[in-house]
Length: 409
Image 1 (cartoon, rainbow, N blue to C red):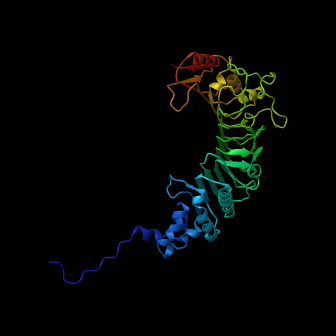
Image 2: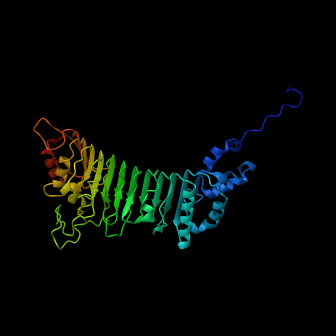
């Protein structure tokens, strides 16, 4: 028989909500920073403890409530008016502003206001993504912050003053994707990592990039004249890909031969302007890198013209090239860069195919026992990746064999 008397009442179970509420305010502020701002504010109805926590979050995510759904700027303007008034001026770790559409100048003013609010709150990482077909124009005012370390921009129109980061001494990471660059210069002495992808410039002058402390660079599919790179003596790795949008096209290009600056019928192959600090557009600035990936569509003359003043790649360890470097009848571009890379250890040629899946992959190595060669004696791996071994590939293989590179078939 069960014992007589009232059994001791069991303690009520501790709910997950109670466990979260037991966390210190500082941790809850951090947790709320991962929520869209609308959801963070709605936590005020959970309990008395939560009523004002959202006002001190360490991050603002001004996006849709659903991670995969963005909202229009006009859908949140009124809400953000109240939020900016009530939110405490605490330091912000991250601010994300993401929209798929904006309608008018009023929307643009609001986005600029929210961006300046983030800077006023000493944000460390700022993301601004607009998924509209156009470009949202940010105010042509310099960013001033001793705290901003990361800036990630998409589909934004950037003008001269904003791209001078002299007043952002902590800026280390800058990403620009599908942006319109209306400036003649991008400059930062503190920048370590720079990524410029699918951006454009309609200027007749090259955008000059000055970032002497840069460690990694990605410049891919720039639309317009190829940007000019100033010396980057600390560079470790760079990927440069000149895509179809590059305007540096030789109008008389024929099977790897460029007309140069002496043919009046081509208005594109012109001498490098006198205001350039070196005779190179790209290669001079990245010549200190240890790892390079240099790709170009056929008919673009920048790399080939740079090779007329080819710098020494004295630290280069790994090099990835595509068929552009092998199109000239005598493969001079490939020979030139190999001869100027004295410590090269690995060469990869991705020929007439796009990765990562290549039908054919061959590996060779440098054989220094046969006779002296003009290329690096440290070259121990040569990879050739293609879809089919045709006459073009066989020509390149024969060329490499002349440099004592042997392949095992």
